[in-house]
Image 1 (cartoon, helix red, strand yellow):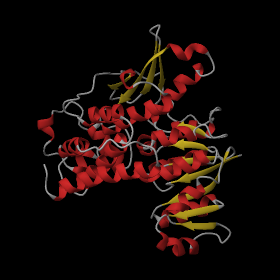
Image 2 (tube, helix red, strand yellow):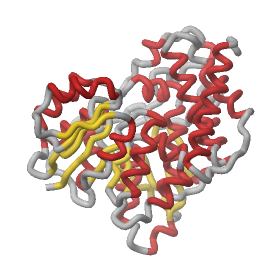
Image 3 (cartoon, helix red, strand yellow):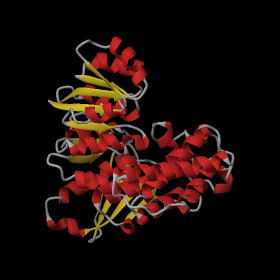
Image 4 (cartoon, helix red, strand yellow):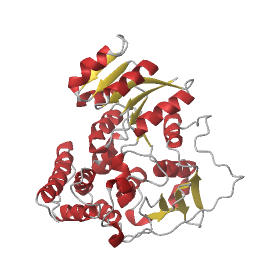
Length: 387
């Protein structure tokens, strides 16, 4: 039975991971759970799954957590606890939101564990630091994003033979988010609720706003480059509103391989937990007896400028993606707090990138600094009401 550590267990990815484990309880056992502050939910999870250890990020909640769970379950607290629990199972699921998940990514790979990665920001911001750790004996990185899981599945057939040299292009599909087809002038008055009304996926607020700006897809372009070693000019984004085709690989002879399923994050989660096997529960199975119509169209780069900004940061390299990611997280926070309008998100990120200092990504400190500087640029603009 494979042991699983779920970091960010009370969030969207974490709770869906637990659903997968419930469905496949003969194959997987939860050995560790961690949440930042949702102590009541964490207590309920711990009482159901009886892990060996649990962790709470906000240390002042540790006593409440300890009093609500079985006495034989170890309790850890503080940020370092997440990293510790990432090393205590065969598979570490990184469902931590945002740049805060970097430590989990580094700890899991450095300890030779399989990392089921839903926290794309840590790979995007610290790709040069993550890459060497992937060669640690036993370490394995399996993406949980539906798009990168799709690409992993499309490419797994060629990993062991010379056909990999015939890969021509990766195509990432995007739903288009809640504002697909709308022009920039139509989006000046959209609300937070509008941005959070995603047409096909149920996700947390940060990633849902990123989807509305297409920044999420831009981050996934950088992630695809880091995961699969494909040049940016060979990674394309196409809008596919049905969210049935999750991504595609195009080969030199014109063949396109695609992974299709109904939108259900439990499928890529289950794939990451069970690889190279597959689970017996058909998450996201398509009813092919029903009529299906699939649409594809190019993204509107003029209206959704965040996509182009992500490409630009990725091509600059070094700490530019970390700088941009920090700026984006600060801008999204400001939007969710009602301090800026939706259209200002891309403007603030672009301004922050203009201040990028070009530092190398040669240490964890340099990456953390770039992330902080990107955030400080945006928070400074918001405080001064610029733009």
